[in-house]
Image 1 (cartoon, rainbow, N blue to C red):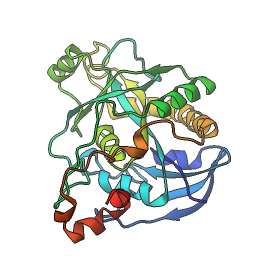
Image 2: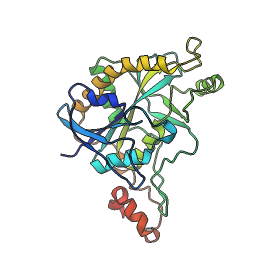
Image 3: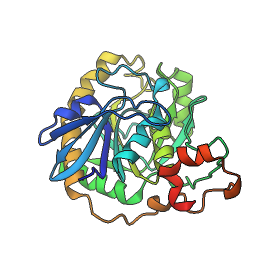
Length: 285
């Protein structure tokens, strides 16, 4: 059986209780290699594929991530839904460290990252007004409750470039915009998953209050790692609960995101581009 559920997160999830790893799959894509081999196995009775976003040992910085290869690799494996777990800073007092926020919006503050599969003679404009799969967001929220974690559904994830954390001025600016959490990775994942017609949701695990908070004005990696370790056990429970409760049918529009997005005259698409994007657009061409 092919895995239909993908999980992006830290490599610690590979050793989560109940995950029966079966094989590692190293893939080469038209955009190069993903961050790490995919670990395919069974969890809660279903086939899943795990990917360590930053590679095992956390060796790839946010700006260096090959987002296209990571998402395309899931498509090759047959994945239809992605649960993306990510450490974030909180921009609101109400989102406390150890809380799990399930944002439904993004704001992009990255610089020059590639977040589309489409170029080289084929143009597509996907709808991205609602960047998170609503069905998958509900599954994630219920999974948090089942795991004993209080979810915070909704809110906006501000995606910054990094790898340095925000200046105090930036942190205050983002708060004035009404942003909820801040991270460095998930905007590109969400866009590419939509282009690949894969359902996507972010489970944002709050580690700190960012530097705006008077008690957190000098956030250190050590402090964040301490909270990350506490979040890890909850993350494993949430993932297992979400996989167990995952409905078989997709009731969203994610699986037809490209149906009306392709703009280019079919007769002018270069043959090399057709072949490169066959997995994504073949059914429409």
